[in-house]
Length: 195
Length: 367
Image (tube, rainbow over all chains, first blue to last red; front, side, top):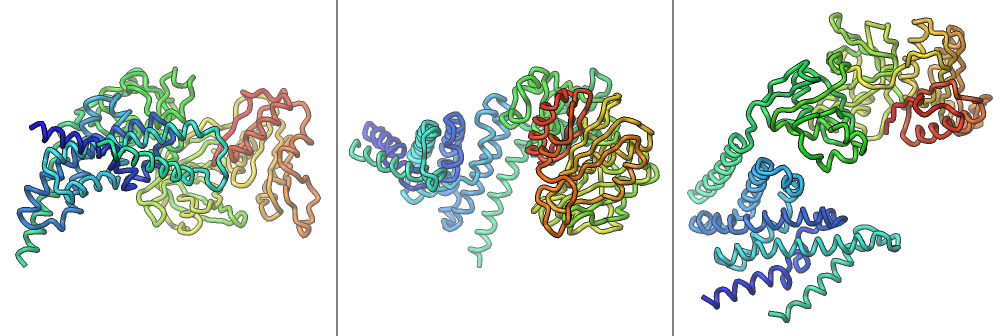
């Protein structure tokens, strides 16, 4: 029991830091570049990604192992995963709008933006490639989401600090952000010896 | 073979069941029931199904609030007061509504979803707005990039407008837009011309409506317009009038001048028209005629980059420099400006320098 718990914790930690989906796989880059201008926006989007990733990864696990695999239809996983994610985002948006206006303003407006976020599909596909079980897929989904959020908030903080500094003209905008993302990725690999 | 059938069946089954879940969520969770919109302290009440935007609900009830972007929150025209039931401001509204207007509960109608009963206040003039489908009877080239379009109004249309106001032209679905969109254009004809409406439309590269008008619209086509909208019109006063507009910005000014001639208004008018070269000038004969017909009207065209072959004898330089040279004390004047935001800001600076009170400077900004 303890061993399983430790294993899950290890996976959780790895998905946030050492195997950060954004910084090691470079997935979800476009929203990462677009939404990292302000910490507040980055936090809202990060939260939305965590929620969607954390729920769709196990959801896709269920669909894959209960429907696709028994019928040997693993080659349909791309299209089916995309449909599942899109449908979930749609329903989540309707629910959030109904439940709380405040939550909708802070989180709901980002949901349509991440329907086609490749990090979310990426997490679902890694879950399948790495043969995670259901518990692992839950932990991996949430962990990856939190990792993505952490990276985007860190980047937003850096960009806010950088707003007043003089960036060489050819590097201004996406150029310098990609360079910083590279340095951040190197920094995150520093965690690899921890566990 | 059977494998393919199973694959298709499962794919369809998953898609259909997910669609059903979404639909179910929409009719149960996303159903806000019947909502009541009370307009101007109960003067009118609308019963609508919740869930749509306020702008769409009002349009459905044939109350046309001006909107140039088609409800995308990018023009800021559809502002109105929502005194109860709208909730907090959305991030998409904030750029369009100043701190002061927020205190008066101004909101963007296209961004507010009707989820409960609302109380709103809209100007009485909005009830006078009509939508009609009219036939294009003439398209004339005014310059290389400005066309004049004349619409013949149906006999039973009761569109009324003040000289200077604008209409919204509906651009149907075509290669540049997936859905019909409305764009705002000032009326250039006189309000006393009850048979038709005229517009001056300059071709904007990739502009949805301007490209449509310049490349696809033909005489005989039907065009849907609604209006009139806008707070830019000739004020009742005895003050001198200064008009500043270049290019297709001439439209509302032309309407004002024609209206003055029709109503026999004898106020002093000076019209500064800025253009780059001689080929950008138009309507010179009409304006010369107006100089004769009106009591005290001076038309001052100015070229900023006259070519040698233009043989230009008139004013040259930027329009702001020309105003600076030709204007003395403006304290008893009111000004009407139509043009790009940059040109308007520059002209407002010059006019206030000439002592024209800021609240007597009226303008229509277009991008």
